[in-house]
Image 1 (cartoon, rainbow, N blue to C red):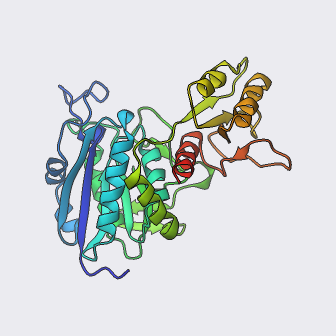
Image 2: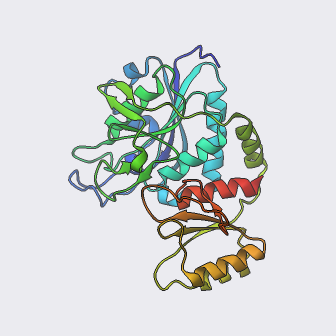
Image 3: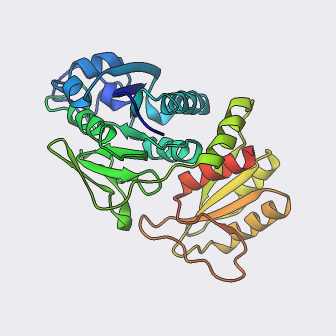
Length: 317
């Protein structure tokens, strides 16, 4: 679709980037989601100029991303879809908390026909910090959103551009908290210019149209849970989930998809009872190499939390 305008729509959802603390030297004792998105934008010198046009700010939610809800995802997806369909909009920037950012990014990549850029950004330090990282991340996000040819759902943090499929929060505190594992980032933002080393991710077109219809008509999201395989694991939790009406289970397996025999037995019982079971790996890098005759569906390289999102969308359809 040809873009006639230069408008950048900035959607706020809260998070640390909008957090405040009582002292400027406190980077952990803050309260997330206190500053409105318009106030965040006004606090960044040069942001309007960097956008190449007008910034339009909208507050979709105001929460700590550890408390992200399906209702917020639905509202965010529908607003993104509306913005992407507007020829006057060049791209979308979303301010988000770091804890579940990778999940929201994959959800949006799965349900949007992102033929324009949808850029999620964040901060590890609150807005009141002595040296906050949010303002630079916002500048970098706008730089990505205004880059010619940019498309797809990406995450911008600490100068790196990550694709939604691979990005993961890998550190609880440091500013450079995100990684794309052995896949590496798509590129970097350097002094306002994007240097790509990989292609932009593609949109979902037909699948996106169906997914958005399903989301719009959804009364209750499918229940999918994540379980972990570890030394001494039992099947008690899985059996309990089945009794409680779970519709899908993602197991974060050890190594190349190995599962403790007691847990595996419970998962087989669940699968026989009609529960969808998908297997991922606990390993932060690489992905499971499937073998002929594997009992459980493979996550196709997705982490357990992202495989859960994909399974929910499949069940929703």
